[in-house]
Amino acid sequence: MPQTPDLHGSPADVRAVHGVPGRLIALLAVACGMTVANLYYAQPLLFSLRDAFHVSTEAAGLLITLTQIGYVLGMLFLVPLGDRLEKRGLVTVLLVITTLALLAAGLATGFPMLLGASLVSGATSVVAQILVPFAASLAPDHARGRIVGRVMSGLLTGILLSRTVSSLVSGVAGWRVVYLGSATLMVLLAVALRLALPRQAPTTDVPYGQVLRSTVTLMRTHPALLRRALYQAAMFGAFSAFWTTVSYVLTGPPFHYSAVGVGVFALVGAAGAAVAPLAGHWADRGLARPMTGAALAVAALAFALAGFGRHSVVLIASAAVVLDMAVQSTLILGQHTIYQLDPHARARLNSAFIATFFIGGALGSQVGSLAYRTGGWGAVAVLGAALPALALLYWTTEHRAARRHPAGVPAEEGQEQPGVPVLPVGDPRGFRGRSTRLTRLRRRRPRLRRGPDDPRRR
Image 1 (cartoon, rainbow, N blue to C red):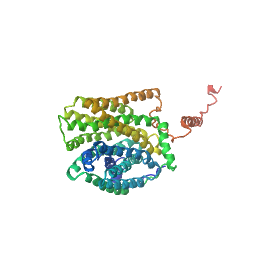
Image 2: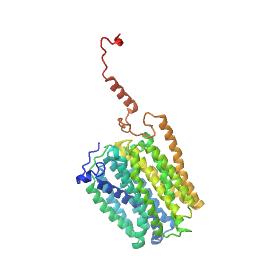
Image 3: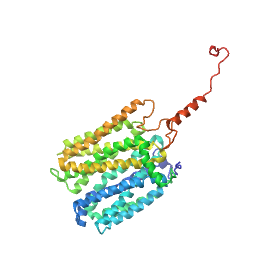
Image 4: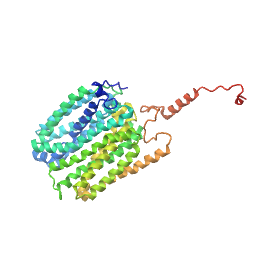
């Protein structure tokens, strides 16, 4: 069982947000944004890197692919360690490795060296996905959604602002400063988290190999985990298809934006992060299912707006804001759901969840590029609308399952019932164990003694 965190600071800090220091929540949000930004700094730099290392455009694009592969590998093999090891120490080690990898990238003398450094930095940048379950474990049950939402708003902001920051910094000081500057930030972040994070004991002591196997088992044990991962895979695929191809639209006629202009346009998407605390509030109020359906529908409508606004930057920007809000909402609602499945396996649950939908994002980026080359922006809009629409059709099956189980929580949702604890993964008792306990409780109820004049005694 995790130890009660030793939260330091002034009484005002400790009372700031539902018993968790407000400055700690802010630090976790900033940390998530800064670490996940390492995955996206290279996207606006591809043309500069191509010229600097004298490689083809296709070879330069391999840099993005390897960074994403590294992140997926980190999700599968490093994030589950958050249940096996003390989290503060694990975060510190990963940030040190990230710093060294970014230094190697900034000082790279050849393109293979840059590729290797990007693979390593991508793998260790999963620190964000260790900090989010950490925040969930610190939060009280009634406020977990809101606190996770605030932390996740930092993560989405980091994704959206990374391209802008990279474009501006490289335009002023060159591409190497982007990597070296991020390495400096990682050092400062490692020190800040080391000082601020409370120690938290591991939630399991099983061997590492068994931890990895149990991560796969969780997908079979908890249908809600697979369902939520597929919802988010569709949403992140649409998100990636939009942001991968919108630069082609903005740099072409009639807009003719520069690379810096495209980076500045990405700032509008940061407005989507504002919905994160609100999504957390919906989750805490038990509205995860209906608001998920609404977000899926809104995402499909956002692509319809983007398709009709092919020649209007205002409509495209509006579609970007709406889409980012919908994606952020389903992400927070999904994480709130899966964190309730097993409090002792939150890092592994998050690992399976993020890795699944990140694969969806990678596929969305590739298919989106193909759609743009074959059918232009209209084809991307159709693809982007189809993905959340398919997820919405799948969501209707969850809704019907909920109506078939009005007295309890459906198997698809897998959330805790009031007064009924969620059993650990693999507990052989299952619902039969719960039924047996309820039977024993009924047998223990005292019986009313009937008086001698009570006709029922006869």
